[in-house]
Length: 190
Image (cartoon, rainbow, N blue to C red; front, top):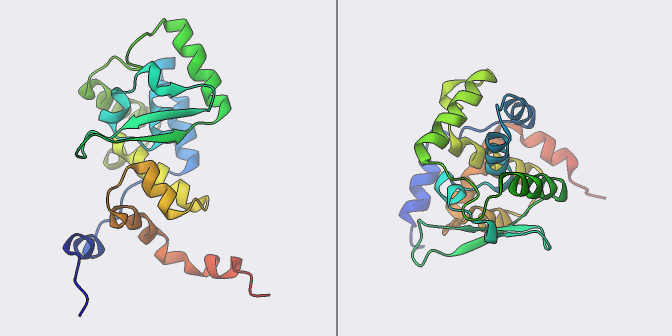
């Protein structure tokens, strides 16, 4: 008899799937940002899949403009491991301009978690997003879903999200259970 992983079994029984934004909603949300800091903060949540606390702890020194990556420090896990997330060149250019214009030297975003939550809630409200999804963690879910849709291997998504257990990453694949036909049709049997 195989041992049962209780955590995996509990996740598999979970009824509610993660809420997420589609790409058009992300674009709309970003267009309703009042200022560059808020836009970059929300865009970075979307592009990195980081938790809000992780994002608010990013230092300028965590961004590698040469290799195009940002180091995210996972505070929830023992030993506080970090993970490296690639960033697109266009976003790096915007990020570098923002840093130079604002003369930031330490943390990229010098705001509290509460303020970050309020910014996300306000911007999502302006963009017409329902309250259930107006949360920083929804961007993390959106990043995961978009990565899987873009055919990023599940182990890479796990690494980018900083999950210790693959079951935490696999929950995102349940979103696609209702549309298996499109995946089957894309398979090459010849």
